[in-house]
Each structure stands twice: as C-alpha cells, then as structure tokens.
Image 1 (cartoon, rainbow, N blue to C red):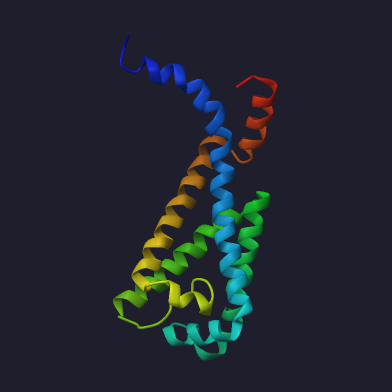
Image 2: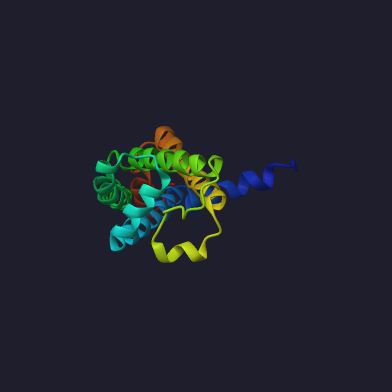
Length: 170
C-alpha cells in the first residue's frame, strides 16, 4: 500500500466536509471581529477620538470624522462579510493594513497608548501594541487566505458546495 493511499481514500470525505465550510467560517470569524470592534468604538466614540489624537497621526479637524468613520467602515465590512457582499473582503484587508501601519508606528515610536482596537474597557484586557500588532497580522493572514480562496474557487462557492453535498455529488 503506497504511503499516501490512506490520505487519498480519506480525501473525498474530508473534501465534502471541509471544502464548503472553510470559506464561510473564515468570513464569519472576521465579520464577528470587525462588528465587535466597530460597535465597541461607536459605544465609546469620545474616548476613541481622544485615542486617535494621542497617536498624533491625524490633524485636529479630522479626529471627529475619523472617530465616527472608522467604526462605521468596520461595521460595514463586518456586515458585508456576513452577507458575502462584493468589496467587503477588500475593505477588510485595507482596514487591517491601515491598523497594522498605525500599530507599527505606535510600537516604533514607543507610544504608551491603548491600541484602540475594540473599546476603552478592553484596554485593561490587552497587553499592549505589540500583541495587537501580532493579532492584526493574523487577521490579515486570514483575510489574504480568504482572498486567495475566492480567487481560486470563486465567490460563493460554499453555497454551491453545500447544494452538491446535499445532492450527493461532491
């Protein structure tokens, strides 16, 4: 028996179970994170505006619009990921790149500020900018994986995959 024969016999079962479920699970994980972060920031919008000002990256007149706009974009990205809307994965990736850049600036500048990732109450639970940077890099990796999945298999494949499993064709 060749060494890979066991894997080859297991592959159809594994393919049927995992293939249609991986993409939506990844999207839903990212969606939950973005919705949680956006809603938490909107709930404490004043504190989030003060935090943006402490980073010193935006001019004073833009602090208010950024404090409202970033959480709204996060919520839109999360909702778009849930419903599989076109452009939501790209928005998620762009926001993650922006957040990683800001966190990197904070780490390099040795700023003693909250990451601003979720809400002001979450600051005590997180241990600094480096951990937030690593966490966002993992989320960016997940986002890139979802983008590669979509590029390879097309959007919405999980729906057609579930239909094929139901019909016994996969």
